[in-house]
Image (cartoon, rainbow, N blue to C red; front, side, top):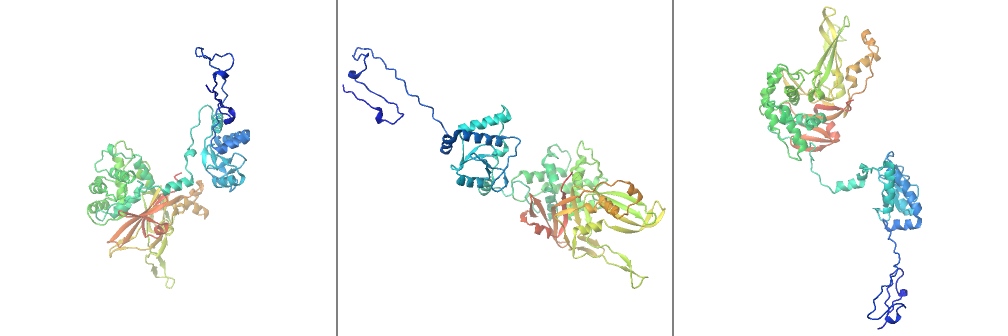
Length: 568
């Protein structure tokens, strides 16, 4: 039997060596005969260490080169990244710009944004950065995050030492996409055109554009939208017959819960307007009984109606439906005690001050309003003729070619002369002055520009250009603002001087929507503009198009809706 021997010199180092012996070359003490019981030689196998795994080959080379230094740098960086009292953002040492995501170098005490971290990696040959949001390690050579068991164990130890034995939940910043991710998502995603955000038109059901523009202004009103979308009025629990609030709830549900782009026909709201029986109420806060009966008689037809009158009718009906619901504590009159969404959003007060020219007694009266109606024509004035003192010159009421909204408000709150006024203090008829000021401003300020005038000779439309701002300061037109100006001029009465004056804060309003009337008084058309997420849109019945701020400001406005900037 030939013997074969395999030597270890022909095998790679570290390999297990196997030998085969013949009977002649067996070690002494062993029996090689066929009847001999074989004995197994106990050979001690060499020790094979457990292989070490690294996150990548680059971090493995770094551990072999400077293991303790690498662990020390990462321990400090991970503790900074996981510190709950530290802001998530770090300042880049290269551009000094604070970003959401920065990288702390594992080989030097530098912090960089992603752009400068990549430059630092190529120049300084520092391949690893610790994400300041979560402590994970990014390898710039691999262009990816790596998972290293040793570093992950250090990260968990730091996490436990900072938060205790209870593991910290993943922060929101961990899952926040970067600007590049958001740009990629935006380019490679397809969205529905309206995405159920209220960008939808109304079908014209026969000269119903006056209704469409008012509904668009209410649909894009954040107070009404939040009220109806938070179950402020539940149709399933309502027992009121021909309830206008139920019809409005249907409109909000269609616009903000249905992902549709075609026009919506508010059939239920239109028929509810026809069938409404509010003429039975003895008190209507917004419309007189004569105007209300006229409106209801003409509404059930195909004639064009006035958008402002329909707005008053709709707000009044929503208020009356609220007080008709069970468990309602509101009164039919527009008082401060009413808790309906209409009065919480649109209810304001005007203060009328009539001052006697003889005794200077001031008679004050408050008038509730839901909107302000501003004249576009200058008021007629009577003055003496300088050429002939015995004659009087009467200036005709005219409308300037171009006006500003602030000028119209100034005329609305200016002092007027009253020829005959019965003064209770004097006990006789005296001359007096009258001034209107806004005592209480509503969160939603509706302003009507009186473009339609009616006289015995006929009706006409005033096409005066009114320049209105995107931001409106109503402070000069308030009662408190008037008192402040009077006190500054030294014209306060002794009673007013004794009253302490509170600081007058500014009342800033932002433009919310615009209703425009095009054409003549008997053959016109209504369109509207509304703002949604900072972008303006034009609504022409069922057609919705993008609009610019310049286009909105150049429109011939009929109704303006402003929203208070802060409710505090």
